[in-house]
Amino acid sequence: MVKISRRKILKYTVGAGALLGGSFGAFKVYNKSSEVAVVHSKPLPIPPLLSGTKSDGQTVFNLSMQKGVSQFVVGKETATYGYNGTYLGPALVMNKGDDVVINVTNNLGESTTTHWHGLHLPARMDGGPYSVIENGDTWTAQFKIMNEASTYFYHPHLLHNTAEQVYRGLAGLFIIRDPGNEPDLPNQYGVDDIPLVVQDRSFNTDGSLRFSGEIEGVKGDKVLVNGGITPIFEAPAQFVRFRVLNVSNARIYNFGFSDNRKFYQVGTDGGSLESPVPLTKLLLAPAERAEILVDFSGQENQEVRLVSYSGEVASLSPFWMPDAQDNKTFDVLTINVKPATENAITTMPDRLSTIIPLQESQANVTRKLSLEFSIIGFKMTINGQSMDMNRIDQTVQLGDTEIWEFTNPSGMVHPFHIHDIQFQILSRNGELPPENERGWKDTVLVKQDETVRIIAKFDDFADPDIAYMYHCHILGHEDSGMMGQFLVV
Ligand code: C2O
Ligand code: CU
Ligand code: CU
Image 1 (cartoon, protein in one colour):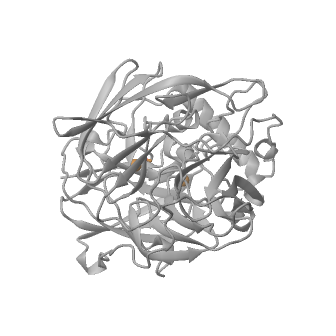
Image 2: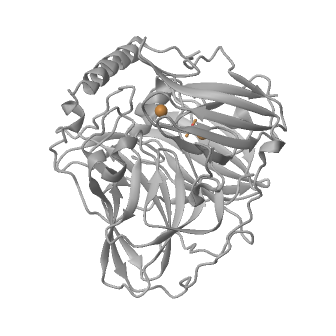
Image 3: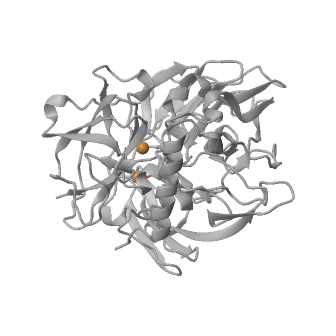
């Protein structure tokens, strides 16, 4: 069993002290921006695609978790972690129905795990805190791809120690395709089908990543997209699909464009929406994904920036007080429009998929989860309890449909994630969720004092011994105990 180390406890205590201080006004430490010159403006890095090798009807992928050195600060080196590289990892591309084998080798010099976020698979293959990979070992996950075509991701999930490993660079994408059944959307990877892994980081003057283990989650003052700091993307003058992923430890973004243009959300965490939803702002909390379509037709030689209008939603800071970035609009990506490509998609389908709503009347069980902060012990808890590997919090009967009702008296916001399943949001404070949330989700933002009800069917996989996790995806909250576990039996 992994035990919380003395070092961690010290970190949480120091963090909580700072946090308390913060609520009394001494928050400057977080607002101070790092005065380091960073390496800007390189072209947008595109994560390499990895399609695996076929063997005996299976598709085999090899991932190595390793240490590396990255160039973020002018004239300095930054020690980072990556999968098969120095920072982040390759995009694993696969089709629905594929049988995949993923070998994960840990060369980090410390224990870790790798979890497949959003995927529906047996608990034993899920890569959560039960599947520790010791340094030098290889762990093999083997499962069938049952999810809808969409964008998912993988990242470490070690008990009490997820935040730091992710912050150092460990995360990568899954792109699940479903040829013949997906809507006709731009799909030339790297040309008009572009992943945007958005993260925030701060750097010390010596080039090192500035990570602190405060329980409210670490935020940074520089924005990285696919591992490049506020880079430039050359977009063809046509419809472009962006697969936007918030892989930040704590920051919530309110994406939009500098010219306030309209764009269309076509997908959520776990699949396509029924039809494109026009938006000018897109709120995305840690671990949430959105596929959006942006029309650059006829805009050759123009420049537009993807920005975060964070000042408009500063109250959604996971801190008790927003940091400097939360209070303003900041750049994420500069887009320069270039000539269109030859086989450009010129129209947007008006029908994308059919989503059959799960009905409340189908539910066998309703569970209530209260997301809390306990001043005694400075702990983030669920129903007053902090994560304990020796305690199973919920037992779900295989095949049941369940409603989970989240309430949030903590004074903070919590993007809440459940392993194993994709769910539908029934309501936010009794109202239907906004149209762009009426799709399959595995993470939902629960705002201060909000009641959010979700519904899901727990199908296919039961295991009396290995549990799935549910937790807040602000990684500092998760590490400090805002996590629980459920068995499906
Ligand atoms: Cu993205 Cu429990 O994980
Ligand atoms: Cu997950
Ligand atoms: Cu949280």
